[in-house]
Structures are given as structure tokens and as C-alpha cells.
Length: 293
Image: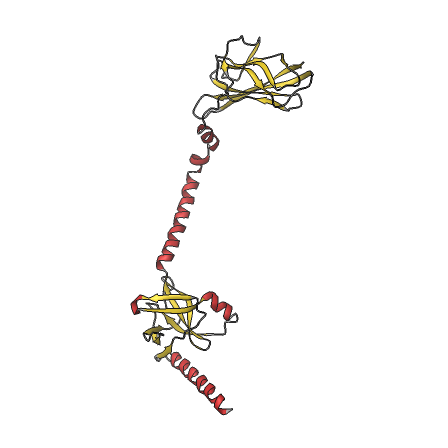
């Protein structure tokens, strides 16, 4: 029984003795232990040796109550040396006092075992990584400031920019106008856009293909988009852009209409300036009677 107890007593006293030496500033001699569940690995080029270690995440999982001891650190260049540790390949490594590494250029990345529940911190130079993070943050801040200062220039006219990036979508059915203009015409706004007026439009019942006479007068300097709406607001036809002096003789309705008279239907004119931005101008809604037979 005593044979089993004495080795433990001796080991405990030796560990306490080592801790006392450390606290008094004396040189410590430690030996790095190999563990099969080390996840981390780092190569110290200066000492031509590779060290396996527990990552910080592993240590938190193994010791959730933090009931372990850290004797010192390996790998820092700015700390206060307090001893040496023999690696598994027999190459001694300097051990530095805990938390004496440069907090800006270096960081603890894990721990290597030297005794039961006793570890040495593994220090790695993280200056380049942190400088990269700082540069990225500065770039993001600089980009945000630049965007804020130029918001109006870049995004203030986004609708105009998007419209300007599009070419006018000319209606393929638009033909040279050879007929006469409707009797009723009116001008819209100070630009004097000529809007053709109709008292009534005749359509065929129960079919989508229709013969019509819809025109953009030649004196205009804008595109037309012409839509036909039923009295309840249902859109039964919408053209694409029609240039001046062009017109539509044939259209395809969205739906077939039953026989009847549809009073207060709407012939809607949307007008767009013939510039790079296709700027929308004032349009007009003209009431018409649809005679469907």
C-alpha cells in the first residue's frame, strides 16, 4: 500500500517545488509531453522543431472549470525567460514567464502539456494577420466614407442612370403612318406634345387580333407608349415605344371582349423624351367608347 502512495507523494512535492522555484524567479526545467489528442501543430524554424499542442478550444472543453495551471510560454520573442523545456526530439526550448509576450504582435494559440493538469502556452506571431485585419477595416471604413460623400452623385439619379443604360424598346408593329390623324388632338404641358383624341374605337368581339389606328404624330419629339384600359381599369393592351410619325394598324389584345358598348374606357398615353436617359414626360388619359361587335 505504501509502495503505491509514496510515488504520488514524491511527485506532488516535486511539482510544488517546481512551482516554488518559478515563483521565486529561479530557472525551471520542464519536459514537453506527447498527447495523442493534440489537434494543433506548429513548427519553430528558429529551433528546427515541431510542437503538437491542445488548441484553446480543446482546453476549454477539457477543463470547463479552468482547473489547470500554466507554467509559462514558448515561442514569444519579447518575454522574460524563466526556464527551459525539452521537446520530444531532445531540443531544449526557452520558456518565458506567463503573459510577458507582446499583446499586439503575439498571441496564445494553444497549450502543450508538461505535467498533470500543467501546461505551457504556445505563442505565435500574429502581427501580419492583425495588420491585414486593420487594413481591411480601414478599407471598409474608407469605402463607407467615400460612398457617403458621393451618395448623391452615384445613387441620387439611379432611376435616370438605369433608364439611360437601356435602349428604347421600339414596338415591332409600329409602321410609317400613312393615314390621317383623328379629328380631336390636344397638347399636353409646356412641351406641346400632340395627343390624338378618339370619340370611339371599334373592335371585333371574341377575338384578340384587332385592326386599329393608333399614332404618334410626326410633330412630336418624344416616344409614345399607348395602353387601352376598360372602364374598370383592366388593361387589355399596352404597346412598346412608338417613335414620332409611326403608328399601329394591328394589335393583339390581352383578352377577348364580349359584344357590347364600353363607355369611359381609357386610351392612355405615356411620353418619353428622346434623350440618353429616356426621361418620362407628362402623359394623358383620353376617355373613349369601345364599340365591340
